[in-house]
Image (cartoon, rainbow over all chains, first blue to last red; front, side, top):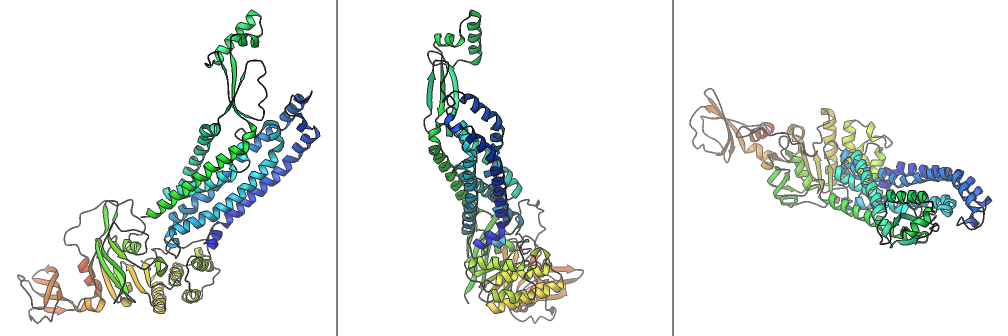
Amino acid sequence: MAWVTWRQHRSQLVAGLGVLAAIAVAALVTALPVRDAYHHQALSSCLPPAARPGCDLLVNHFRSEFGSLAQVGRWLILLPGLALLVGAPLLARELEHGTFLLAWTQGVSRRRWLLAKTALLGAGVVVLAALAGLLAIWWRSPFDHVEGRMAPMAFDVEGVVVPAYTLYALALGVLAGVVLRRTLAALALAAAGFVLTRLGVEKLLRPYYLSPLHQVATGATPGTHARDWVFDDKLVDSVGRRITSAREDLAVVHAQHAGIDAQQYLVSLGWRRVITFQPAGRFWEFQGIETAIFLLLALGAIAFAARLLRRRPS
Amino acid sequence: MTAVLDAAGLGKRHRRRWALRDCTLRIPEQTIVGLTGPNSSGKSTLLGLAVGLLSPDEGTIAAPPIADIGYVAQDAPLYRSFSVGEMLDFARSTNARWDQGLALELLGSRSLDTKVSALSPGERARLALALALGKRPVLLLLDEPLAALDRLAGREFLQVAMDGIAQTGAAAVIATRVVTDIERVCDRIALLCDGNVKLEGPVEELLAHHRLLTGARRPLGRIRGVEEIIRERHSGRMLTLLVRTNGPIVDPTWSVDEIGLEDLLLAYMAPEELPTPQPPDPWRLRWHG
């Protein structure tokens, strides 16, 4: 089976290596000025920005200069989706062209055929994705120091979640292929499924892998959370009810009319700011949990595909 | 003789229609069986069940393990982007037992570097056959192998097939709509109609036990030597009967003729009643023959 897999998918492997190489070159070229500026301005001694005088300015300058580059780097989030292009045709193309009649009537059972191919291709895409994940860690390290890597779009392009997402994309493609039996349709369905699961996990599960921390601030400066993932920042009254922004605005206007400091006025009302966040230090724990989730999803998709394959095509 | 393939009460449903129903058939060792019947009579379904691509809804089918079956599906599906040599590599890496020498011999002189997409239909069919026989199977299943071939390519294909079958000692089932194509090479004929076997037996025996009787129109009673009247046709004052015999027919009022295989099968195929038209089934799978 190794030879068959290699023969049928070698062009995809070459394309994958090409994409990785192109990204590596782009990363190398764009990372140099960032690292240069970072070391030159000794930003590492500047964090948090209040560490020494003038640091605020330096960090802001760094942000304004390289912020757009960091934005571009976020497109790496799409990289695992490329595995859909490997997974979707795996079964769909054989079913579409009728070659399954040849493939599954040789000495290798249908089940072994699927598992061998998926395992080999899975290993291939996982290696490529792991390299991409490492590359992203290196490329983003100056940004990570400034803005952290806990928040989505940074968390999602670094480390071990990248191979896990990639393997899941492959598995989902395979499953869609056996369900729909058409490559293009399978690709579309798997892509939709992939985006939905990724977003679903990110929005609904990830904030609560470990119970989030809350910071209650009564004063003006709530403390810095530059590198944490802040996903809720709200104003509550003395009994803990949320204050709408309209009410907050009204209170501020009221304070200004009365000629008192708005912040002090809010404090005097007993209003507090509650910030809900996941601290930067939990990065690897979160990576581990999210990786486990997507590996399980990938295994589930493959097991389901193997089950469907046993009953189909019939 | 032991059977290589043994189907008993076999049934397979496609949606609501039975593609195969109550089908009983034994394929003896080292025998070449022509499996014939009209379109969607269940030929491909039977082969699909034998090779394990389908699983039966009723009854049982005992067949060799897939490693011991050489199967060529209709239209001989192959990987178009592979070269001929790569197709052989494919078969070698997916089969524990593989006879490269036999496959090369059956393939003839075709260059191994030619792409499958550049082959003529005849060459494609021959490659598919070489792949199936290179497994040294005990059972070879060919589904409409001649449908895409012209007469010359068809003859050549059959010659190669017979050569390979002789070398491997395999039994073979050749499914075809056109029995004249394979009549020469078959030991036995099985006729499938509406999903079950209407007629089965060695070719000579079938021909020896059927006769055409022609005579003046008359009320039909028992005729000595006739076991069963299969079909009767009236034309004017003449009456023609196709009968299965169980002895010599001596009645001088009948003129007795032999019948060819094709006419015999056609007579068995002809429906007893007018067929009820059925809407085309959009879910028809590609291996319905």
